[in-house]
Image (cartoon, helix red, strand yellow):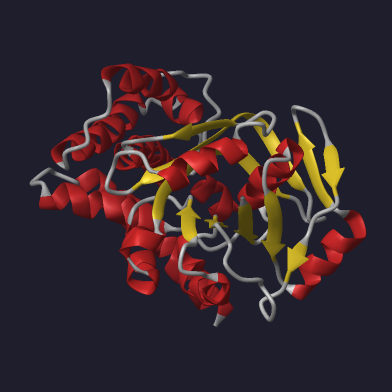
Length: 310
């Protein structure tokens, strides 16, 4: 199986590196010239709690991305989706599947409008990883789960083939799901709550609880769970119980990547995650005041960032 990764950042670089280690797929990274030169010089460097390693990798450029890839792995941020679509368009063939692991849901419609309904899979990644200033991938803690499937549900030969390609990859749990939309809703319940809370409070979960915010933390989490249920995708009691343990742990250091991006002064996915949840709750007739407050907080940061750069 031939799989192209757009970029070699924290997610794509890590999952691509493990796929290469598994040896069951041909892997290449579509990267910009500067990253291409870096990878050709040093290889793809991964600093992981499970052991550091570096690999020589195949890279391609936007001018010559290759053709007829079986799958393209997409792990960009939502605000980079338009440029990502332009970048992968020349690499698409009639049978190429796009596997996006962006957070939220709105990117699915955008990708299907660009490439057609049949080209797009649903997917999500559960991983704590970041890119260092040196261009190394830092994998901070297990797990490194990858879940994907057909948006319409059920199983298909291409999903099974993708799962088989990743199966030998070390230190990754790969799941071919027959209910990927339900899996994505479960993730946004956790991630959306975490993003809204940490961005709004500028603190991790444990700090909020120790500051007397346990009720607000649980209200946000339970609101997100209610939104998923109202949209026809209730999260299982077992999964909710596991999430709630984190949201009631005064020692929890959990933060969202959105909060870490904010702390670094970078762009954030306010509308794509917090805004999506708020609108989905509003359409379901739920009181989303708490999410609206978090969204205004996040978008105020975006305004400040834009004005500072002007």
